Each structure stands twice: as C-alpha cells, then as structure tokens.
Amino acid sequence: MDHWNVLLISHVTAALFVLAIGPFQILRRRRDRFHRTMGYLWVAAMYYVCVSSFWIVTAGHFTWLHGLSAFTIVTVTLGLIGAIRRDMRSHLRNMIGSYIGIAVAFIFAVAVPGRAIPELLAEDPATAAYVAGLVVLCVVVVFVSLKRGGSTSARGGSKTQAELATGRAASAASAGLAERADPADPAERAERAEQRDGQPAAGRSSW
Image (tube, rainbow, N blue to C red; front, side, top):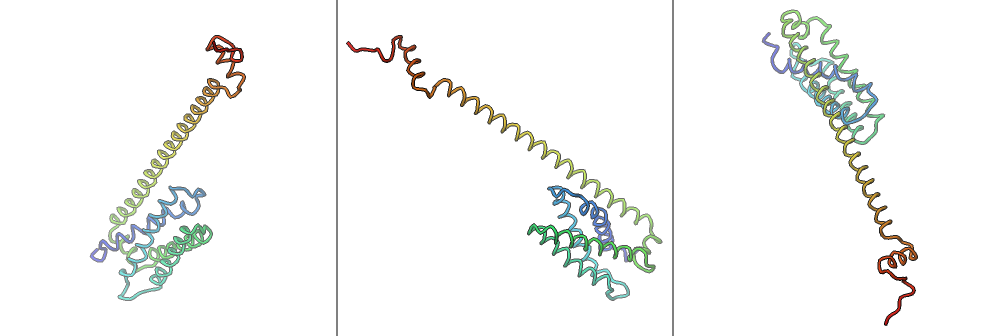
C-alpha cells in the first residue's frame, strides 16, 4: 500500500470523474451554461490526469501511456481553443479523441496484470471501492448543483421577462390615456376648449 499515495489515488479519482461525465458532455445536444461549466471541470480533471501520470511510472521508466498523456494534453488544448473560437467541429472532434485516449489508457491500466490499479483491487479492495464511491458522489453533487442553479436562473429570467412585458403594457396604456386626454385633432381641441370656457371658440369677442 505504500506506493498508493495521495498522487496515485487522486489520479485515479480524476480519471474516473472524466470517464463518468464524458459521454454526457459529448452526447448532450444542448450547449448551454450547464454544458460549459461541466466542460471546464472535465478539462481541468483531464489536465490533472495527464500531467500527474508523468510521476507515476512502472519499473522506473516511461511507457507508451505517457506518450498518450502528452498527446491528450495537445488534443484537449485544441478542443478548448475550438470552443473559445466557436469552432464547434474542431471542439467536438478533439474532445471525442481525448475521451477515447483516456478510455484506452484506463482499460489498459486496469486490465494488464502488474499495473498499480490491479494490485490495488487485489490487495485493498476497500480503498478501491471508496475511490469509486467518492467519484460517484462527486458526479452526483456536481450534476444536482448545476441543474438546480440552471433551473433557478431560468425562473429568474422568466420572471424578469414577465416584469418587462408588464411594464411595456403599462407604458402603452399610459400613452393611450394621454392621447385620449390630449387629442391631436385641432377641431376636437377647440370643442373641448369651448366646453371649458362656456362659449364658442370662433365666436368670442372682446369688449
């Protein structure tokens, strides 16, 4: 268990988080604030997985997995740049490629005997179960928090739009009352002035 230090456990936790939310991000059609927030979390976790892998070596030397980590850093960065530049085609392709890369690396790390993860599963299954449960809990908390925040924002936006519509209707009604109170027709204005003064406007004489 000595080699299962904080770095290795956090590496596995971040990798499981990336694998858990990746399909949702890729397959979900809406590209709203929820997608962007989850995307930033996914990119941060992906960078951590790739960079931390260079401190996790087998038999004191690097393997092809470290080369895959370097390549994945490039594809994640290109995908992030594509999103910033609104190039959705480049963004989607690079993010899918990054997800496939980390999925292949995870399968290899889990399935090949002698690797750290299979040793953990064999020697300390309780720790492995704890890490998996922690990842599931983190994903659920993030999803629920962002969903609740999105729903609150949507209700606030609907309320604001309703208030604006009410204000516009009130303004229009006030304008209509003003028009009726001060007619633009000169003949009607003269008639109202006549009614106020008690004599015809055209027939007034000065003594």
